[in-house]
Length: 257
Image 1 (cartoon, rainbow, N blue to C red):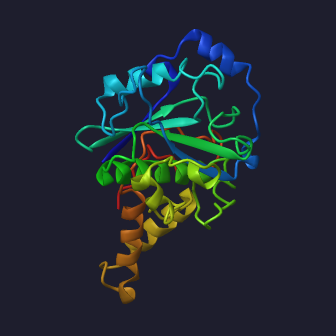
Image 2: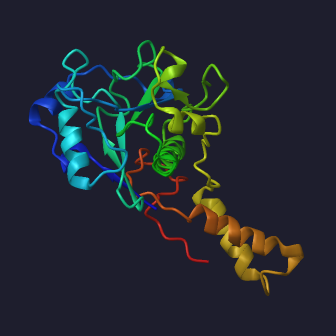
Image 3: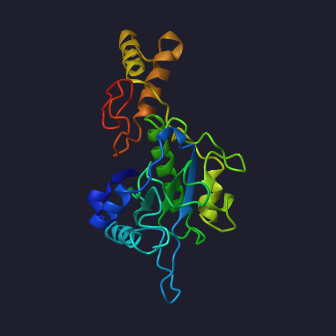
């Protein structure tokens, strides 16, 4: 599965939306301690379901543009980011919404400490595979942000003790749907990956190259190789928030062992 980050400039947000967001109050990254997960379940004027759980890129972009105006009471793009799963489950797009520090309108009373992800779809309709893909993408996004400047993200647990909140944890609602909500109980802040600084990667590489084989030294070299490969198993095609961090691993880097 490939995870692709799509900024507003790429999916085509309106100039008026950009102006509105530029004027929006922002909150410092250290205050962002909560992860809020929603689904975007919606119906049209005739009460017809209009949010599938799997999307073509064109239809997902069209829905993002709908989110610019559909809730004038909340303002354009109420979620910090939105997630859409492709029809073949091979790609998950993470669309830039209002932004990570621009105050959202996703979860009442939690928009200051929270970053809100809106999964495109209605996960009260059974689709566990799409739910798995969407939550995995959010986990990887959170892991990346925590390695940047959002060091406290996920520190405030949900009322059930989970690392991520479903909308139903703060309001009487079925959101984010049964298939998504059950996954939040085991939400992984590290995105299923080990985290290394650039220095640690270099030291591990030196260690491995200095040994005769990966089976020597009690198998530690094999362990080190596997850790590095695990770190690189699923690169994120997303920007790194910390622009000037000497000890941060950028996901675009290639580590060869």
